[in-house]
Every structure is written in C-alpha cells, then in structure tokens.
Image (cartoon, rainbow, N blue to C red; front, side):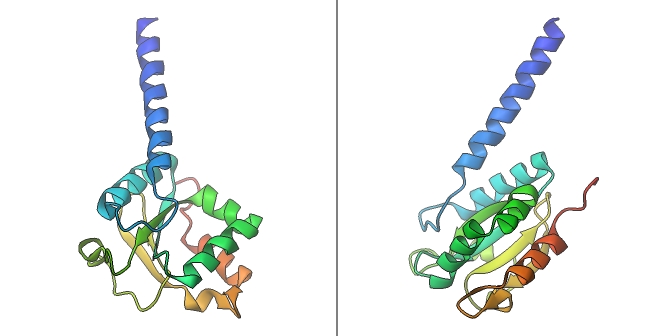
Amino acid sequence: MTTMRILATTLLCGLLSVAASAQALPEKFDPARDAAADVATAVALAKAQGKRVLVDVGGQWCSWCHILDRFVAANADVRTLVDANYVWLKVNWSKENKNEALLARWPAIRGYPHLFVLDADGRLLHSQETDVLESGKDYDRAKFVAFLRKWAPPRGA
C-alpha cells in the first residue's frame, strides 16, 4: 500500500506541476519575460502532453498579432485543433526586448506575427510566415486549419 501511495503522490505532483507550468506561460507578448525559460517550459509541457509547441512571435504593438488572437478565439474548430495538438507560447519582439539570443536559433523573421512549430524535444520543425494565412483583413480559416493539421503531432506516436 505504501508503494501505491508514493506512486499516486508522485503522479499527482507531476500533474500539478504541469498545470502550474501551463499557467506560468504568458497570455500576451511581454518584454519582461525570459523567453528562453518560457520555451523550455512549453517544451516540457508538450512532451508531457504529447503535443507540439507553437511559438507565436510578435508584440503588443502588432495589429495582426491581435487579429490572430481574435481569429483563434472566434473559430471553435481552430481553437480545438490548437488546444488538442499544441502548447501555444507568445514570445515578445519589440524595441524593449527583441529576444535576439532565442530567436537567433531559428530562421530569420520577415514579419509579425510569425509562428515556429517545435517538436516535443524542442527541435524546430517549421517556420511559418503568417501573411500567407491571411484573407483580407483576417485569417483564412481553411488555410489556418490546414496549417494546424499538417504540423500536429502524429497520433499514436
């Protein structure tokens, strides 16, 4: 019985740690954040949850970043795909903090927002310009869904 309690306690602590880490990730672009630490947290969460990391690089100054947030929130199918397959992480890029050391790991960014897809080990899988996902003054639902499905982790893996 003691072994079962230890196992249950360990499992509960692990689940609480994952939940606390998820809450610790930024909900907006914040120049005061340690982006490298946030990526490490997101990767750990992705590994624990069988997901990938979607790194959203932008800033509070970026109108298309806010349009992207509204688009994801307004489209239940997009939100469901994101929640089921990705740990979404906002990484700030602004005059206050360009996060150059972190962003130097990945391909150069042409415009904002920019999305990077990482696997559960933190390896870069894809660099995505978001202008090709736009339609008029919003994002194209079909293109965005196709992007999310293409880079989602394989099920059963």
